[in-house]
Image (cartoon, rainbow, N blue to C red; front, side):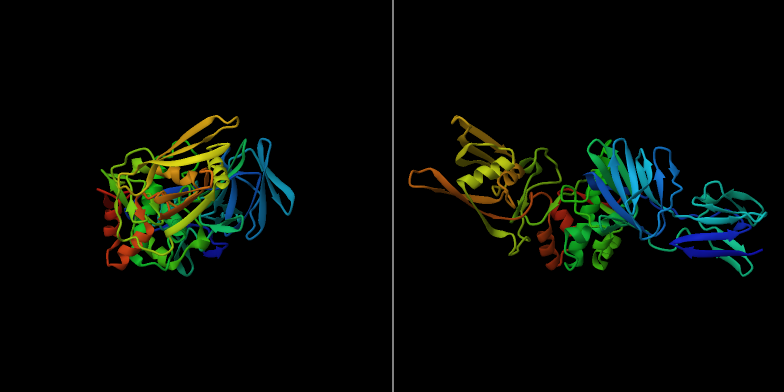
Length: 456
């Protein structure tokens, strides 16, 4: 009786007459339940190109059946949105079409099973396969943690995979799998992968990998906490997060770095909890010297996002920046944010945040299309920041008037970059340089939290 285990395209192939497992009860290791993240890479697209590096198959999720058309390693495919279906093209020629959703799924198992009659059957799943134990009993192959093949040279472990599978979308490589969905707006491409693999592509995009290890660890825990909260609170949306700043920046496999990989691994599934639940651990680049209460920046009060002075945030990049708008430029900037005037007459600061640092309420006075008076109040610090196109709502305002005492320009001088909630990344750098560890950093920026591993 002979058996061979070969590695081809990152998958284990088994050619055997019989598969054996050790007699007695298979041993397992108690481990946390894995958590997957679904990241929207592309939305509302008419067409998307992809290629695979490794072993993948197309799966029609409307039928849960794999497609007979193979995905060849390192060959490019194009997905096009058509009326009512997704078309797959190779070298410009249609090769398949699906109602969708459509998955590009890793082949994590492949076996060539040789029957007693000499017939070889290819299997991409252990489902339906049985293994014969040393005691003569059988059990499903899918339930065996380390099956072995008995051959002339002894035994060998049957591995689930021998290489790294990656899928590329628009030139960027990602771990995990893809799902492509079609709606009236076009194609949505979702990358699904484990939470810890996802973090490897997030942390180096959100914080320089050359920064101190404790700052990187704090960033890893904040990013992990944020996405776990998103997973638990997504609702019926087909993805948990996007790959840009509206969630947190995710660069995939090509963004990974040894230092940030280490930070992810060394924080070992740790998340920030408030009363036992993960928090959306919002973070920003630079506090400008003060963080804020959540209700001052957005709307909802959150007990773990409280304003305070931030003496650790000191840098040359995000302090004393200046923006100047002429009256016409100010009108255009406000219009782009949804506040329309025929002419802007005045800006008046009406309220500051609890720390006194940021402008919380701004009154804009002007005229409408027929000369009527128009007043628009912009409320909450982040809306003020966005309306004026600024790095931060922590600013002072100087108004310049012409000889007729009409508003001619505004000069805005400010500090910080971002909304000012939760952890300042530059502040985390400052704390790390002063010898604080990641637990100290997180406890400083998130009020009343505890740190504990998720999934146990």
